[in-house]
Amino acid sequence: MFSGLAGAALLTILEALFNAAGVGLNDWLARKRAENNLHDLGVAETTSTINKESADAERRASEIAVNRPDVGAVVADMERGDAF
Image (cartoon, rainbow, N blue to C red; front, top):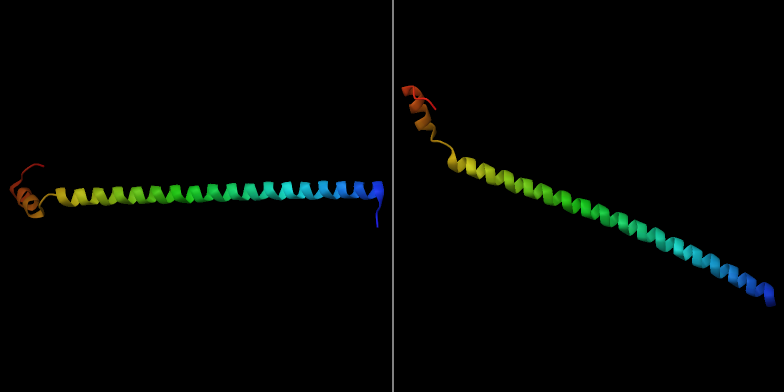
């Protein structure tokens, strides 16, 4: 169909066009992977923070439960008029 110089020029142009399209596609895919990685990192950090805060809250609740005063003793002290 094409011969000689015109065919070589067309092949060179097509090769450059496809190379540019391939580079553009690779760049786009790399950006999408980076965005997904950042999203996944954010999810992991949020989950870690929630788990840490939940564990801290459970620890504080356990400490309060263990160290709370005896209700009967507090009521008896109040009835006697003792100061806290």
